[in-house]
Image 1 (cartoon, rainbow, N blue to C red):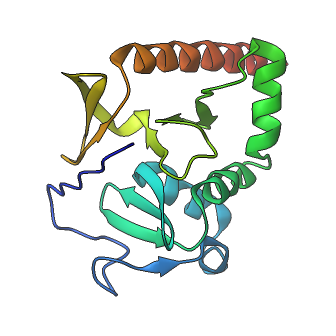
Image 2: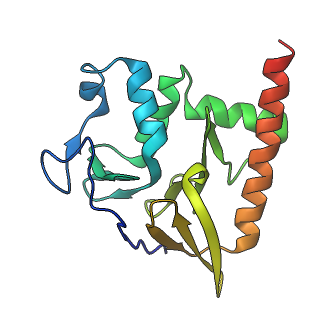
Length: 183
């Protein structure tokens, strides 16, 4: 079970303040108004974490929060589609190259997403390590993740789990850097 604490340090909503605190958004429709590169940069720079809720997926960004009308897996796949891929092909490649079947961190360009549970679980939180300021162990296999914006979440995972995920991220990034360098 994951608990989500939403602490907003600053009250600035830069590109979502028209409808107030929550806004329903379909990125497919939104992308028609922006070029794909601009949209990709806006999403990547702002994601802190996201999770499923009854209305789809709640995206917690550095400058606010946005309700996405589909599931978190759909949003993850959308992020991969921006880079002309899919999360299933990424997962298969990671399994083939590194033999990681479960608890795979997702790397999309410079964003590294770590999952707090199984990808198919409704309660899983996907958080972006790029925007993490620090991780504090609370005991009883609970950790508190504090983001650069001042927001924090508490998840029921050990610090060992997070350390292993960071090691996997570094291995994958080294492989990607080496692979692009010698092509």
